[in-house]
Amino acid sequence: MASLSLTQFRGRNLVADSRIRPSQTVNRPGRVGFLRVVASDTRAEPDLSVTVNGLHMPNPFVIGSGPPGTNYTVMKRAFDEGWGAVIAKTVSLDASKVVNVTPRYARLRAGENGSSKGQIIGWENIELISDRPFETMLKEFTRLKEEYPDRIVIASIMEEYNQAAWEELIDRVEQTGIDAIEINFSCPHGMPERKMGAAVGQDCALLEEVCGWINAKATVPVWAKMTPNITDITQPARVSLKSGCEGIAAINTIMSVMGINLNTLRPEPCVEGYSTPGGYSSKAVHPIALGKVMSIAKMMKAEFNDKDYSLSGIGGVETGGDAAEFILLGANTVQVCTGVMMHGYGLVKKLCAELKDFMEMHNFTSIEDFRGASLEYFTTHMDLVQRQQQAIQQRKAIKKGLQSDKDWTGDGFVKESESMVSN
Ligand SMILES: Cc1cc2nc3c(=O)[nH]c(=O)nc-3n(C[C@H](O)[C@H](O)[C@H](O)COP(=O)(O)O)c2cc1C
Image 1 (tube, protein in one colour):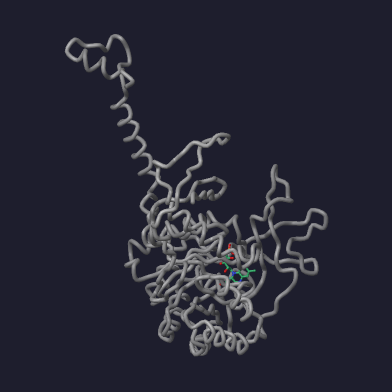
Image 2 (cartoon, rainbow, N blue to C red):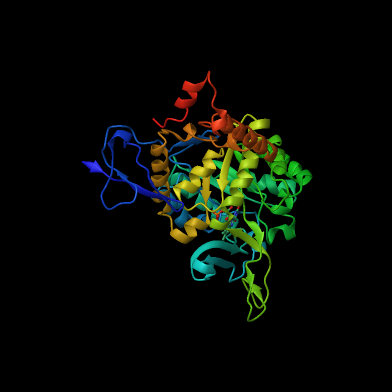
């Protein structure tokens, strides 16, 4: 049976089925360009599975810490739909100190000609870490691991500047059987007021000390989640890896103010007439996240053996193409948070299908086949200038034909004639 596969990647329609061989390309009447039609062959499907810090996942798609990992019911749903791993909502020892407000989200829409009724491209939240009792979350982690022993559950944790508290937190989450820990050094709102989250991730001396406590205690792999709200994100990433963390996750949300209501003059999201800066996520942050992940990946490649350390790309992922971009920069896994809030848990099926389409298009059979492949194409601006000057010189040198009739010579006459023939 002939099969057709037409997949959209970031606004471009690509024929993405590499079972199609060039020789089988056919023109189709009534179409601009062409569609390629083939009979399916027996080539194996691309393998999406990854092994990261010794943890095996069926695919690289991980639920990012946030509402999609708040309780047993939703985490179970994530596994049932096929997510590679789940990172639970960040927990701390004393949830009674965590008091949320509503509304706590505000969205940015972009339509044609600047209309505010279009697609959601940006999402701000002023949500804190989990406000559910720690004991409850621990019981739910245990139940999840009992029911899904082969699936990867990662606890996201955060504590105050207190070694004993961090040690107790790590000890108790590890007792549930979770597979790894992600440290939230990055929440930009609310928690820094208590010297937590981004307050640690933005201060490399503090970060080194806290990472030291954590890594002396933890017996499972530890990922440090970075804040983008810092001048050079490679600095805390380097400190975290040097202090014993096995992986880096980037990015958490970007400090933002969603907007001001021009009728009431009050900021959004508006709680009793007031607001506080929040964290920005979704499609609009994707290019910023790619930039940060690229910087971290280059640093890891240059200074650490990048085979032993892992990198998890986060920010604005809604398509398989978005995920492929993070992997091309060196990410082992890709996290999705706001995308799940907008499209539901079934999004993972689309992500897997689109990532496979991309891999088939390039004949990649595994994630490792293309992980980090685009990193070498980033260079300095000065190097770009030199490359362009060289390329112009080369194009000039091979320019076909004579510039003017005065350039004909007697000795080179035949060659000069040939240089202006088209076939
Ligand atoms: C409503 C909301 C709550 C979040 N809560 C947490 C959290 O508890 N811990 C954490 O590490 N990150 C949290 N995040 C950040 C996300 O995990 C992620 O880093 C960020 O939103 C960028 O990815 P995205 O564009 O896929 O959402 C939250 C994000 C949102 C939108």
